[in-house]
Image (cartoon, rainbow, N blue to C red; front, top):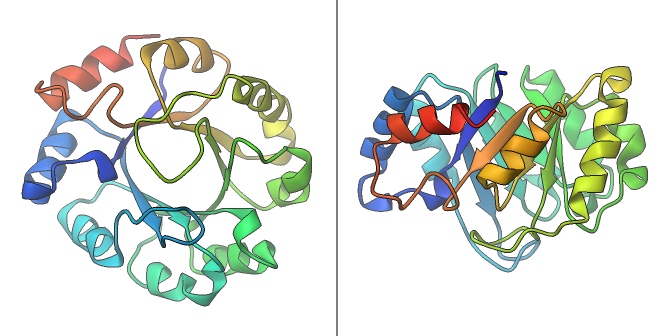
Length: 219
């Protein structure tokens, strides 16, 4: 069974970001997940526009840009203008007055539109937006920090999304506390991809290629 593996670059070693990107790419990572935080929508700062631009220049692999910012419509163009077709931008619907307007700008730019759903966000509150997005990033932890504890009720939300994904033409992705048990359970159910952070990929002192090969063999 094939599923996508995305590297959560906020967990990478910033002492040598280029080496991290090259090693992950050589190891077979499918895409690079970029967490942008503004310190307001979430109580933390993570990666910056310049980090994203640097990684975009270092690799031909797709970028998955996760905007954890208030009112992304105000600044969406500066991200769009530094990405290329095949890249994804996720926004949080709660962060915008009219999220469909922001999503339409992403679509018009030839990028892949996505929404990120917090643990406390129900499927019902974003139901209509599921008709225009191509990816749904389900947060299994509260956004803003790496290494948080998994919230078990998120599994029921994923099951609900998987029931309607074909009808509404989107794919489901997992972000947060992604361990072996989560991939073994949810990949066969239809989750398309998993964002890998400190639980499985980073800080292990192991070759990324060997680690990614092992993860792909979970299922």
